[in-house]
Length: 270
Image 1 (cartoon, rainbow, N blue to C red):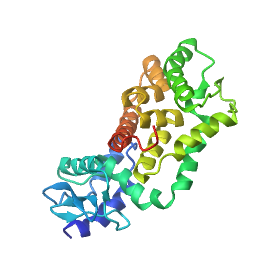
Image 2: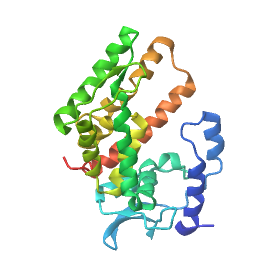
Image 3: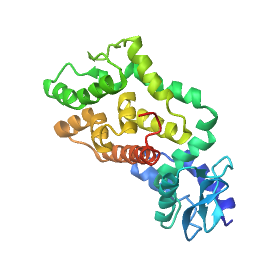
Image 4: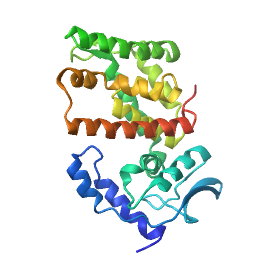
């Protein structure tokens, strides 16, 4: 089999089975099944009113057979860059922005309301609202990392979230929840909404996801805040190889979401 049409159905099947956070031996075993790179060059070009991914001049398609295209030249330049950077095999783990766009085109576009609702559910149990009772050093780390984005949410979004200690559920005021839901509802681009979903699920925080989309803090600062507890544990008890690999995989997915949102200007009303 050769050419884009033959190849698309192959690598997507592998992508569905691939776990970027799996142990290294499992990832290496999975990659052996990936098809070899079959094209010489990728580019984003205007085609039928949108910027499409072209592989050796032929239009690439999503898993569902739709054109892999978007109205943003910046976003499609990122997608083309991923494909041009491939060496040897086509590894889905190296195409994170492409996978976000595939998800947007094949899934989110037809389910905008349910996707917004799923994202908004994080407002009721945001990572930033749950603090350690002890040790005091971890509580201090959390305060330093979590308080600034919570202040931003209060000042910029009108969402004044309550904070509690331990794992007991913290009930939030209806006004705060409505403000966060309103910020999510402002996302009308499926690709931006898909990227927001990735950022929120990876960090466990709607506030951090929205802060990323709005450019309130740098992606590195937001990722560091989300990993405050893990960083504390690593400093005090060390981190094993698999834990580090999982963190690296999550960081790659998160940065792809950040790059997608940046290319689209955030996706929600500023």
